[in-house]
Image 1 (tube, rainbow, N blue to C red):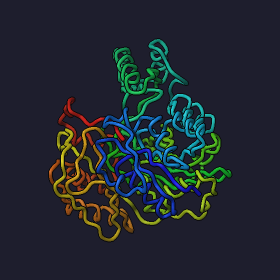
Image 2: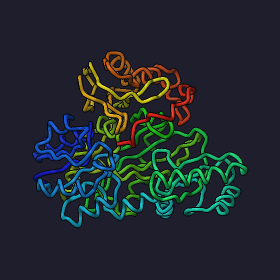
Image 3: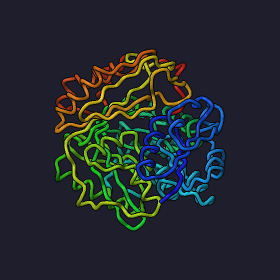
Length: 457
């Protein structure tokens, strides 16, 4: 087992990794930007190193600074958390070259799944159901041919994309050229690669994802699914497990399918296979996230498995501590992301929190690095807390989430708590009538273009 792990991240996920390391008896190193000098992850780590100014590019995305911090402190391994460098094959390769263990998949797998077009081909070869689309990057002429063949509407996606950037829905041939150029420019600006591909667009599907874990001894399991259909601009707001429309039979079938697909690409550590499900219950592959997910706690709540500790054990060369037959699903869990933003306009709301109180009680878990008199910086992602609840069934979980949100006190900044309450109290949410268009009813007011938070962490 490792003696010391450096956490190449900040906020609640850095604290989450510190918690797992403490339970495993591992020392931790926090890295921080000048804006995060007084953050809780710095306070609770055994050691800390400042890696640069507030801007992410100069600190949390600065690979040489992070590697230097690991070497100076003698860290055996680096956990990237989520966001920032968590899906960086380059960081994983540098770690390998420096004899530091990267707590995540092999860099070749990260590269494969990071290229959405190559990932589609690999998953298609493995027998995973696909939406019709191009086999790789397209230019304007190829895009027009593919779109005509598969029929409109289509969606243009960045090959190196994520988070809704480099993505455009096209409903008519006359709009394809402009949408393609816009998506290419966005992709180039966001990812440094302007390549895009074309895929059939599903109107308001459900977003269902499966969690997998694999060790270096050939053992690979799935931990069931999460429903992530409540989202705005492709950014998830609320997640739950299990997904209401799935029967045990479908869960086993899809779980076995993703395990076989993961084995086909020699997947190790934690990963998430994401799908769109149409109104007929048909699944289509979307992407694989080669990292820990923000919403991993809902899976931990229904399975009782600590995914972060398993990640660390796997990276240290240990076998999975359980078999697929030992994975059981109990009750229902819901996670609400609490963001520092106006609940009506979604305008960012950085500043100082003057009061912070989120009630606990049976079945309630709070993952956060926020506290009274802390500063929410404009430099990073707006999420300040995750409220996770567990109940015997979905109805009890909803009731627990409702009372927790109602009793939450956060003063000094605006937050998304009122919006989450609207969602929880919505009759369609109560009836599990969900799809990716659910939030349209709450987002009539356009989001201000200026003053937004920096890139997601």
